Image (cartoon, rainbow, N blue to C red):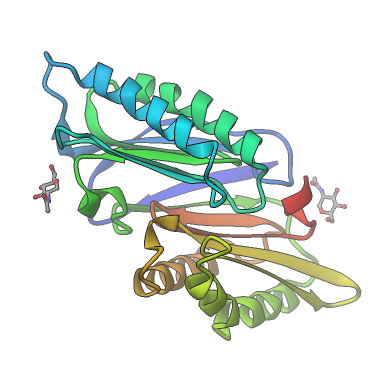
Length: 251
Ligand SMILES: *[C@@H]1O[C@H](CO)[C@@H](O)[C@H](O)[C@H]1NC(C)=O
Ligand SMILES: *[C@@H]1O[C@H](CO)[C@@H](O)[C@H](O)[C@H]1NC(C)=O
């Protein structure tokens, strides 16, 4: 059992779909968001064609992209699309996740120019321009296991050791060749170990600044949302942090 919570700030958005799985770990929700305030596609026009072009482009790009990141910019302007997978997901699984998730997103957000889908294996999004595509203030969301650790304070301290000393944040922000990704573990209590991953959208290839800022935002949210939960993910359109008591990278 686990619960899913969504918090919105700064902008209004709608939650179209939350699928809550019954597995406790790993967290496995599919989250689809349609943003209202960046406008709608014109009711006539070729945007459906444009969206299928985007999907094809992203798919073709995945075949050669070791970063599991793919980016599409419409030659007519007005549509950017991107897909990112956690660095530990296999490239084929990543590509197939993107390929099935993109059409679902278009279906769930039939008019909105900006939309985002988050699943366990990929994140897919599109927006009218680059400023909005990775707007880390659009929303922040978390999902947390309802299963609590017996040592809440121990877990809190272990998470703080991973997230607060800036080591992992710094590693993720600077790790260009690994895809803006970092992984660490911390032991606590009697033989308990927490595994943590941090990752930024690979869009930040040349700038570590936004990645670090984004991770700090998400870590702040993690502290307020998920106290004691044995597993949690916090994400926004630009980065995510996830932890669990199993090594979810291999499952
Ligand atoms: C809660 O977590 C413990 C320790 O990881 C596990 O043994 C147990 O099966 C979990 N319970 C549920 C309901 O997921
Ligand atoms: C990006 O798109 C939004 C929403 O359509 C618009 O308000 C904003 O001015 C655009 N920004 C740029 C830099 O084009």
